[in-house]
Length: 236
Image 1 (tube, one colour):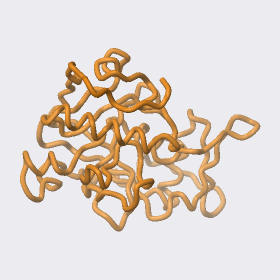
Image 2 (image 1 turned 30 degrees about the vertical axis):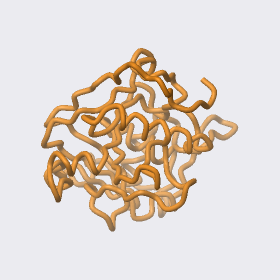
Image 3 (image 1 turned 180 degrees about the vertical axis):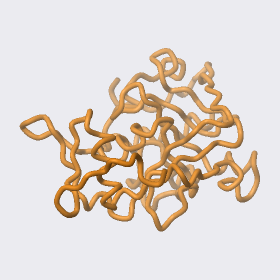
Image 4 (image 1 turned 180 degrees about the horizontal axis):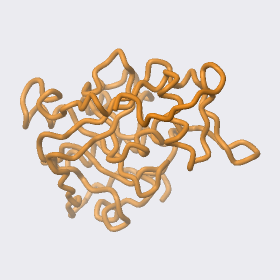
């Protein structure tokens, strides 16, 4: 659909998705920060991603995915076009100080469901809300803030990943999580499983990443020549 403002006479209800305790969330993050850390509202009216908080509705937020490869694709394949052979090359600089982490959810969460056509239609939207590019994020954030007003129960959203179709991406809202789980909600809500963490900028990490993304025709050049990696996932 073309860019539009949220409806002013909405008489429906967003569909609900129960993300159950024990689910594993995957996140690619910067190593100096905790994998559980929510990000604060970006500075400036044009800063931010699809469903970030803003000056009009400031809240900390947390993007993650329900599948390991979805987290990788959503982070590393953004704005990465295929070459004339249909392949994509991730520069090593994009991996600097980055890691992927698996975290166990310790509480049930209620999310606004944006997965199917019916789910999107229930709020007067279509696939534009979850597939539009960065030039439209000023408007998708307006819809996010409007949706939060419609569903005071919602801890976040869940939708079909743009870069790994059928994979699921989520965003969690810090203010709603703090309201229901109290101060320090990050530590209460998310348990980091250290055995699932991989440093992506190491030799073993790059080798693992090349294997994980090979079916996406994605390559990351190794730091120093070629090397074998016969022993499974690093850190396991």
